[in-house]
Image (spheres, rainbow, N blue to C red):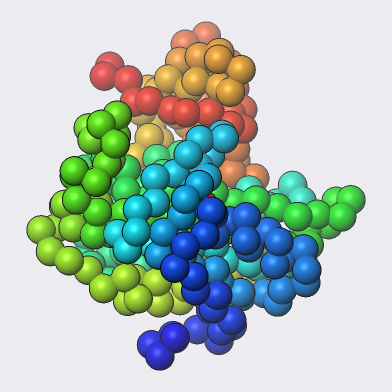
Length: 256
Ligand code: BTN
């Protein structure tokens, strides 16, 4: 807490040695009325959750396993914009804290030289169309070694330590992230999504490229990633010129 440079975010910090999932904990706290800016951190998660019901590998002391509660006064259809806002903030913060330039793969993966080291999960609590809370979960492989990853992740995942060859202070990175999220959040509330979208697009690797989008129902669509719309939905143009709106999918860059 000593180095916090934020006005609100992180002023209530819940730090635990072990939790099943910081995301679950933050969901409960938010339901019980926890204030905006509450942050839950754990040294280790025993059942860390990823997107689309996947697991998130969260070994002890190796990474940042964090969930943040915010309470913007917005309608529920705007909530996905916060996934993009968070991704842009994390890229800026990682650059500031470590000097490394990373990239975003839609919607929420952050990669360094093509390998993922950050995952973001945003979940929303709402009453009718009004957002009551957004729970932003951020998982960052900071000081993880390659042997800490399960075999199936070794070729596709990385950590800051693996890439930079040195150990990083997790507290510094957390402070940088909270500061960047706070400043983009202010900008969002004052000026809307436009600038956040431009910033996000400047970090995105897939835009303007041919990609495969594997949707949750198994369908695969191939086309040109044209951009995102004002809600953060990916727009994919297939070879017949049809524009597909992709709400949720895994994407893969095509070699062509
Ligand atoms: C993904 O890429 O699938 C998203 C991964 C999100 C992981 C973070 S770690 C902190 C928070 N607690 C969880 O259980 N999940 C998120």
